[in-house]
Image (cartoon, rainbow, N blue to C red; front, side, top):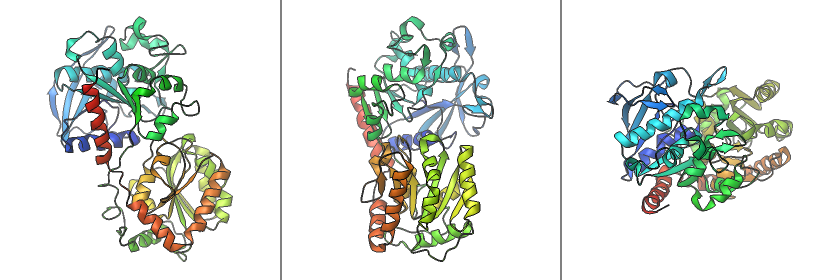
Amino acid sequence: MVTSEAAPFAKTGGLADVLGSLPPALVEKGEEVAVVLPAYDAIDLRGAERIYNELPVWMDGARYDCSIERFMRHGVHYLFVTCPALYGRPGIYGDQRGDFGDNPVRFAVLCRAALGVASRIFRPDVIHCHDWQASLVPVYLKSTFRHDPVFYGIKTLLTIHNLGYQGRYSASVLRDIAVPIPEVMHPEGIEYFGDVNYLKGGIVYSDYITTVSPRYAQEIQTPEFGFGLDALLRSRRFFLAGILNGVDYDEWNPEDDRYLPNHYSAKDLAGKLACKKALLEEFNMPVDALDTRPLLGIVSRFAHQKGLDLVAECIQGIADLGVQMVVLGSGDAQLERTFGDIARARPEQFAFRGGYNEGLAHRIEAGSDMFIMPSRYEPCGLNQIYSLKYGTVPVVRATGGLDDTVTGDTGFKFFASTAHDLYNCIRYATMQFADREAWETRMRLGMAEDFSWAVSATRYMELYRRLRQAAL
């Protein structure tokens, strides 16, 4: 696997969680897996083993001196590409001034170094590439190295975690990334309206493509969700499938969650009420109506994709329902101000904490009665799956992985991306909350769902097997 991040080493989002959880799940089922990623400055490589001293990467006259460090974790070979000139700086993709200007080169070198690993250190049957940062691997294989016998028979799989991020750059980067320009810089290759589009290259040249949920695989073939690549994806629809992400139940389980003041299970829900009380007390909110007043939770980035502006738009109506709400997140400054303002205006009903705190995220999942996810699009989503496990009923927009994982028996869904539809769904859910017996039935059905990585890993193994056997 080739990736720009993997938990617990380097993480900015769900991509890292996948690369921290899927490889060990594959190893448990008998696969041998290596994950290649950059050795960023912030990664602590104490205890890692230097297994390759000199792995030079040439980019049209420029030489990047790389070496490979190996760290074994849960049976997975995590192979770090050390190149101080490119990765020896604070930040993964950028710093407070924005994205690094040399990101096109940084991730092109990662792809070429990964092919060096494949030829000299770890011979794979399949190279599984993740998102645009790894998308030049199949481009190089089908162009620069198409006649190299070293790579004969190796198949490529590209997983799109979020089509909204494509790695689109000016054509001027071509001179720095060592691709054969006439062969790939055209509308059927990596060219995109005069620019270079890394993800497009991965889609065109990979043997197979997956997304992180079945519904998202369908959605990205439409103009609404295709970000300009829907026609290309429709043309490759016979080599495109969705495999739902799993979650790590070792980290997210109310029966033994280290961040919770009380534990509970589907058989004994008493601890959940205690978690609700503790969460309200943590924010100095009244606890006099634990059984009758629903507590709504939100843990999210404040980005347009996540739809939190819809919550802000109908926040007064939500307040008038008499509910309580706890929000954890950061991003859009206006949204931060909105949630901060209402928390100060109605401290008995609303609480807001900026930024991200892992322990608090767990406590919100456990202490809330409902979890709100009004995403405009959601390739997979993890929090709704955590919510199901914690008996916290999801209220979600029916899109992507949210639609795949939440049913009418386990949660509530709305369809139009409007504040009106979101408000009506929350209002209906609060009405259902009054029937305690039916509500607990809904909780237990959600807690019984299995979205573990073992299920997803089996799907990937089936796909790897087909790729090895097929003459694509």
